[in-house]
Amino acid sequence: MSEALPTFGDVLAAAARIAPHARATAVLRARSLDALAGCKLAFKAEHLQRAGAFKFRGACNAVWSLPDAVAARGVVTHSSGNHGGALALAAAIRGIPCHVVVPADAVRTKLAGIARRGAVLHRCATGIAAREAACAEVQAASGATLVHPYSDPLVIAGQGTAALELLAETGGLDTLVVPVGGGGLAAGTALTLAARAPGCRLLLAEPSGAADTRASFERGERVTDVVPDTLCDGLRGTLGAPGLRHAPRTRCRGDHRR
Image 1 (cartoon, rainbow, N blue to C red):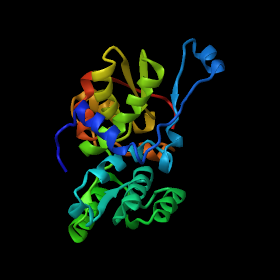
Image 2 (cartoon, rainbow, N blue to C red):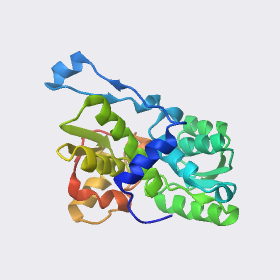
Image 3 (cartoon, one colour):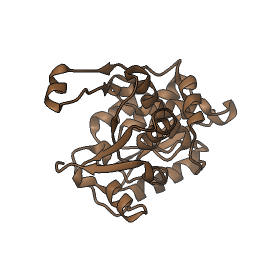
Image 4 (tube, one colour):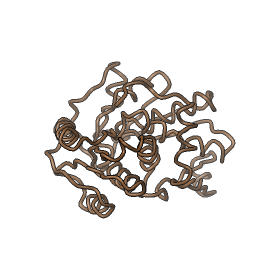
């Protein structure tokens, strides 16, 4: 996996590559919420994306970027649920093997969704270190290509297509709020905003019980020793290096809830 950050050109290429497979999800509005907030709100309905989350964008872009000979050996990742399900679906569409390393505390319904899409599940202990180590073992044994859930440049570029669609639909935004766990969506969104809406402020939201991103930005280096205490299982990962490298363009806020 390349350590280089993708460019906005990669986001545009991803938009074209995933167009036959991903959904251009709706932008939802509610006058009652506008009245409560004192501003106009727009919600990108990525829960209506294939596999149920924005993760399909990045996974699809990564899978369909592989040359045929490489793709034939399959793909591998680690995930607590959403990325694993998205990669399993993208791999199934292309007709290639998929391996997903899952932690012991993963949500059962998400594991069932991954398995239902044809992926091989590999169990490991909780924690990012255990997931990365198990993933490396599966990759070495299978010859599959690693599609990291948030540090892969192709995944980041794919996630950036959500903001691309949102800007096109709304005509522009003053502020865009993005949830942050590993930082793939945040990094892809930052790329899109820098190119298409440089005046738009990007706010990253995370639970106060898993505020490693805020700690990382404050220290100027990745903080990886946070033990998450949150019900948001998709936000329990630590911030990836690409997400941190977009720090100058963002502000991070944590709420006071789990």
